Image (cartoon, rainbow, N blue to C red):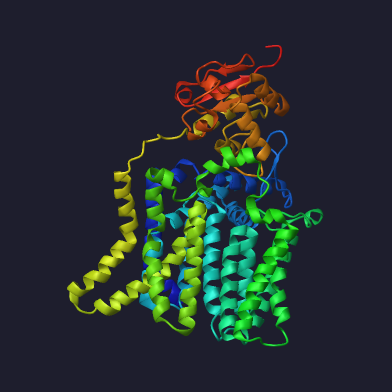
Length: 597
């Protein structure tokens, strides 16, 4: 199908995509028009690109103003930086770079969302006719979690992850077909390279392509083994090139788990052993099963023996205190459904994973009724939908993948219903039309009913930082001060002021997070003062109304430093800064006194 035809089919769904982003902005009170971005990652990403523009130091990944005074090395990589940098540089032809960068950062998400819509229609073209593709696009457009990954004012890598995963799903479907061409394999490897370069989450799409190829080889034999070798060979080559572009020469041998490194090149290189073993002779089907399982298990054992920390995933070697107090309370990596907290998580799980309730039994029927290539396609989607659901139940960040994989079987169900009941007047069409309404709005309505049945307390609006940041910038203009701050406020304070911060919400800033926890949670003033002295802290900024403040309170035992600051009982070396009334109702600011004070 030509690109022009795909664009025409995407036209109506694209209007719904645009509408979804308008609704998101309305719900957020039009943040981008007020100069705000969505979430700390957005501020940190734009700040990182701004620093790259100013310095031109491609390999310098250190944020010098974070984790003050030691600096912070982020686990992010450069592809998204380049995308933002190009947009800002082009806009700088008609405006200053900072304004152009903000405008592009605000607009980039919805634009990528529209591109992703077209890629989805291309990916699922082997599964549906043109009417089915339009329905697919419409259902995709009303998935709130996916839309939020592409929200205006959220220049984050999650949208790119989603786009590249959908592309890899399309390549998995095509490479498992009998006919193919070498260009498809190369494009699939390039897509997987970009996905893994951007985030280790991209490995899920690469695993889907390998699973489709391996299953096709086990069932049919023949040329599929050569395709596996081609895909893995091109992928390893691409990853090596990405490493050379991403890292300076003296860092190429560093083994990281949370960003692309030789660890991941070695993983895919080991999988090339299977094609090498079977290059001369074509084994029987039963033998092919055994060889495939042995290759996968052998790779896992070798990697586990060589690098045991890889079994802990990208967050290996995280400090236990950081995991317990910060990471465990991070919504992105918390389970989407928690049975001990159904009032809060139940409605969210139903909204975001409700389609799977329809998709799983539909996939069972599709597998039972289909044959050949069609059955293989549905089998791959079924396996990875189950995997994505398990991942989402463990960490909410995987929800979008489960939503994507739920879409095709739901559209297949609609296709069946319209074929069976759609041609007999309005009465017979009521069932497929009702199914459309149920798929589009059912999870949201069900979640609303569940939220009413299990009401949760209104936690209020957390403290807003823009006005406080303006106060800090205007009232402390002469030099950069070192701030002891709440973890999630760090990126926006960096973006809006010239000051330094201690904590940011990134696992590599273990020292900054741990010191913040030790400082605000201290029951001994000397322990807190030692942190302040070691980091040359000038100012301490707290926001008692922020949910993060609960991390530094406890119901029993001596009061923590945060609790005493809230009560207006600071130690002698912390002097209260009198804030304007509009700031003082939300924030408390303290100056670390010099010994002579």
